[in-house]
Amino acid sequence: MTQPIKVLRLFADVGGKSRFETVDWPLDLIDFAPPASPLYVSEMQAARQFALLRLPPKWTGERHPSPTRQILVCCRGTVRVTPSLGEPQTIGPGDCWLMEDTTGDGHETSVISEGPFEALVVQIP
Image (cartoon, rainbow, N blue to C red; front, top):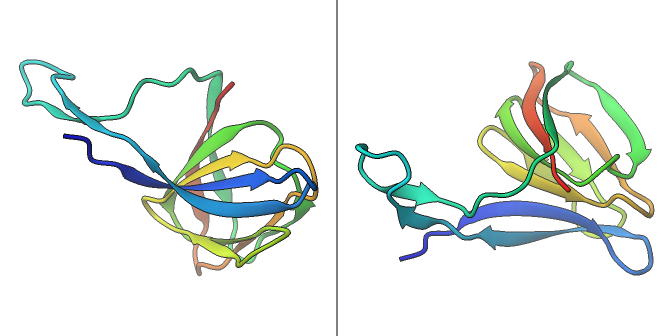
């Protein structure tokens, strides 16, 4: 039985405009860490490096493309991400954001929480 997890994907279309879509990242019940009980895990993905980041309250980043393909997992705080096309999306604790808009107009990010925004960013090939 597969149980997907929702991932917010930001990508550049053929015209260079960034936009969001929600994708299901499949998870399968597997014997991942015996003798612990089976748990839901995605297929392993290659990764290059990771970083922890903190953005202060009221921080706003000018419109930019993602520097490389990467996935962000929010630990604390909230940001609003505005693509070229479509509605802004809010990223908060526990959300997964797949950044694939490495070309084109990019996006703007603003911290909207009262406290800092903290996240784990993993760069992927």
